[in-house]
Image 1 (cartoon, helix red, strand yellow):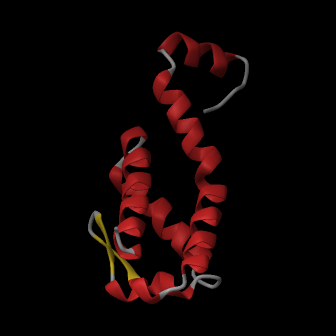
Image 2: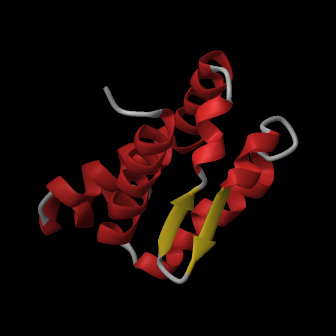
Amino acid sequence: MKTSQEVIKDFFNIILVVIAKNSSKSYGLVVFKNMKNRLIKDFPFLNFMKISNSTIKIDSKINSVDTAEIRELFNRVTDILGPNILRLLIKERLDSEDIKYLNKIGVRL
């Protein structure tokens, strides 16, 4: 079974990939840094996460964090990013004519 460290790293790397695929890796890192800063007060164990260049590193100390706290972190992150990532995924799958139509009627993805 994977450790908390491995799952957290996979979780955040997938978010980074989804954002970067639809914008840029640097923008994805900005989103991640902002989200981390927003949540660090409630989840001090986020200090075990470091962002360097274009990678997210998770210290193995995070494995000592109670899984209930990690669950709450995942729930908060998905609440924060869920609508934005959904927009990116929808935009990725629509063809250009659909996007033009939506833009014309004022829907911004």
